[in-house]
Image 1: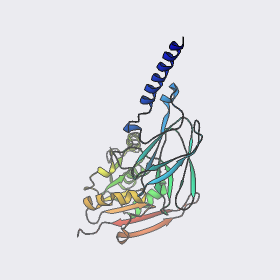
Image 2 (image 1 turned 90 degrees about the vertical axis):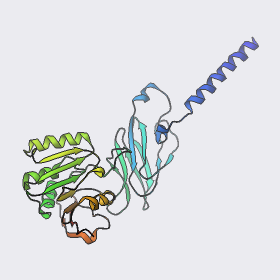
Image 3 (image 1 turned 180 degrees about the vertical axis):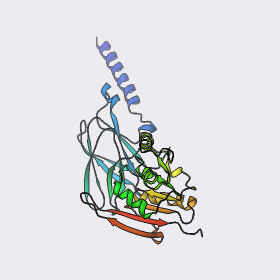
Image 4 (image 1 turned 135 degrees about the vertical axis):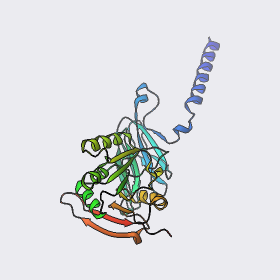
Length: 295
């Protein structure tokens, strides 16, 4: 009897050892995955992932606050350009010190977020980020108000002879407005396939499908050599990242009109700037640049 019990215990210990070996392995794909609930459970297979992307110029240290199945906070360091994936069924709180104060954000399952600079160069968490490693993440999709679009086109003196590009065009409203109100041709470039389809449908609905086209691609890989004007609503770090593309492709005299944000280091190319007061929202800034003669 004693030997039978000993043999049974030996089998149990061997089974536990094998299980520990296989559950303790972590593949490369799991390096940036933060699991918020205990393994396993069939329901966890269907959990959605929230993504956090770092588009700042330095590593981000943030803390995942206790949630279901976790009794202690968990701190992570997210490298520049890195993406963390949080698998969860419920909203999760994260906190980090942005240099001025510690802030806490609620991250929802299945949605993309990004650490970005605001207009004061303070790091905040913004909704919107494609969470991909293979393409530039220029900005979350925030539509430009129609009155600001109209003023941007007016300031840039857009006309029928122009070819207007919008990088990260969102719903395509800028190039559609350039075609409909100014008779210009337009090209919108957008990484989100669903938004590209929305753009094409809107262009057709507005009767300018023959004047504009929308490309599903990474704007950082575009060629802009036929552009006579750019209309942009991008964050400062994205404008800075795209500046070499502008230098490479844009001809002297091409106008660049930016909503709210300056192109870092390009102050000497600004030919006009103004602020549009808003009645119910914040004020909006319009900045016009002109490409200089090639040196």
